[in-house]
Length: 186
Image 1 (cartoon, rainbow, N blue to C red):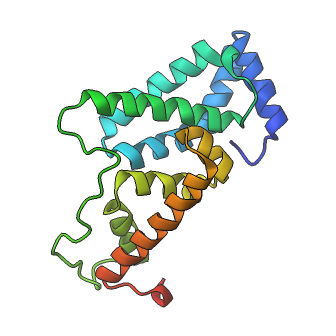
Image 2: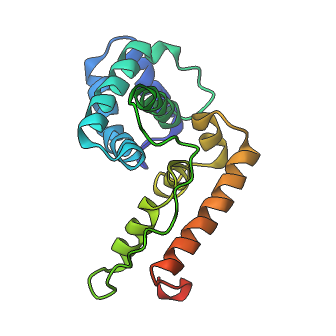
């Protein structure tokens, strides 16, 4: 959750939240809201929707802190809540991209190498990934979660996490090649 708090301290903080401590809730929010927001944003890419789900996530954390069972880290539990809320919202929206769909990875246009720096190339490539691949790489690399934590959030076996990461990396390499960035250029 925060490099400054140990997992035990995180649990103590959540316990205080379950007892109704608004101060502990504010501290928990301050420590976690950016990670949850960016996870949701990379998943949904809709600022207004992300903000709504972020509020819903922390409402659920406030109301359900006593339901935390301690089987995972606090942030893993919270990310699972946010993901479930996001997936529920996506199911409501007609015409949304199915998370299991793999879009055509080529869109026919090549970015101008003079215009983009490395971060923009990487961002462009990641945005071209399917939601399933984008989400798994986001959790593994941007949130630095373990395979076990990702498994818990996505409710899939650890071996499936490993397989998805393997294929997501391959898809990312392929996209990077298509937009003109080689391995040694990053």
